[in-house]
Amino acid sequence: MKCPYCGNDDTKVTDSRPVEENNSIRRRRSCEECSRRFTTFEKIESIRMIIVKKDDNREQYERNKIEEGVLRACYKRPVTADSIQKLIDEVEKEIFYHESNEIPSHVIGEMVMDKLKDLDAVAYVRFASVYREFKDVNTFMDELKKILE
Image 1 (cartoon, rainbow, N blue to C red):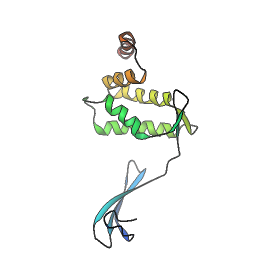
Image 2 (cartoon, one colour):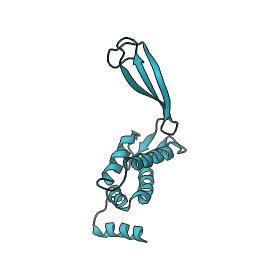
Image 3 (cartoon, rainbow, N blue to C red):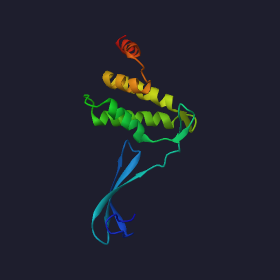
Image 4 (cartoon, one colour):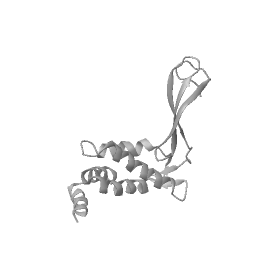
């Protein structure tokens, strides 16, 4: 592993430990040349997942897109960062267990909404209003009635 400070190729691992439910390894390293320390993460390379959009365009899966949507929905809500990351991890796990390497975006949206419903009702409605493109107040009210029942 190349040192990010001096570019030396000679570094040694000083500590290793599993992280993210044993899905990756955190390694503390030190440079033999400049003696500075840095951290690296080793993770299994995931299968390339293709998202099929509403207009039939295809794009590569990006975790940060789900994260941005969930963070926006949970803005100023009593939801911890850990619970948001856990939700995203669960959705991502379901996506990668999908039987094919292509998955429609609406399936991902429904997964996120199902998990948000259990996490925070207001965040769920916020996400649903953007995801389902509510056109008017009546559509919004219909969704609220579903939650209240």
